[in-house]
Length: 99
Image 1 (spheres, rainbow, N blue to C red):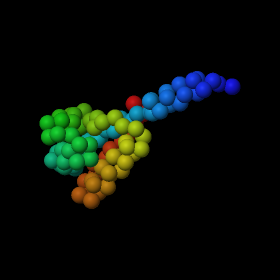
Image 2: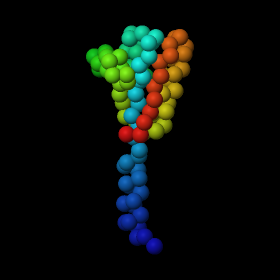
Image 3: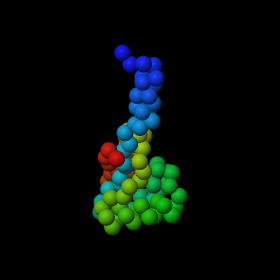
């Protein structure tokens, strides 16, 4: 049986290092650059300069990293992007990948 100290240490490791997920926006031929910047500022809380830089990466490289989050947060942000894109008539898509 593990000692009390061993149990606390293993629990701390679990709590300190949840899996992290990268969230990317994917390029498409229809979503406006302004809408991508708006999504980055509202959903991902980026300032205008960072949002613009990520939008350029999406445009030039096919995808851009929006942030790294725990699973539930990443999943929520992917869902928010899809919902807002559909509501505004754009096919913009976000995906998450384990970091």
